Length: 146
Image 1 (cartoon, helix red, strand yellow):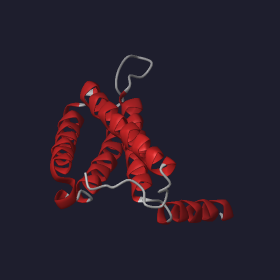
Image 2 (cartoon, helix red, strand yellow; image 1 turned 90 degrees about the vertical axis):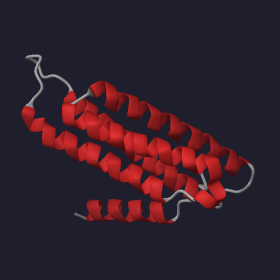
Image 3 (cartoon, helix red, strand yellow; image 1 turned 30 degrees about the vertical axis):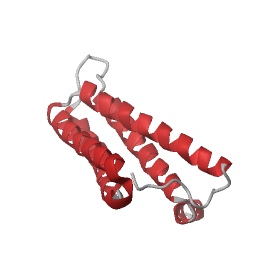
Image 4 (cartoon, one colour; image 1 turned 60 degrees about the vertical axis):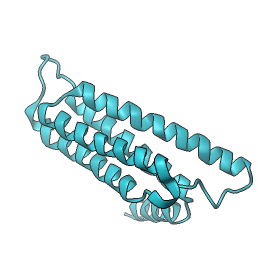
């Protein structure tokens, strides 16, 4: 019980003290983690069939990812972000559409494509955050205007 409490406090502190760039990276990390979980659950069992009992768990993992993507969408600043923010909004909208459709038909390929693109965005944000820290602006984080 104490361990669970300590872990919860650690996670909350980590989030509260993170820069904007670090928060974006955390969201991308969790989205990738949830999609990896969904993909693993979509795999075939030993007899070469999908287990119908996994559909609910797949739906939860994909749903959490869609919630994360929606959070990323509402964090965009269109005034400062300009064209980049518009492009990210369109990409996030496409991610959610693809995930919705892929989940309905249990399409591993489409979920994998979205997962890989989210991971690419995560890598780009990671590089930007690292450059920000190297430039001596660790608490400012990455400008999430886009």
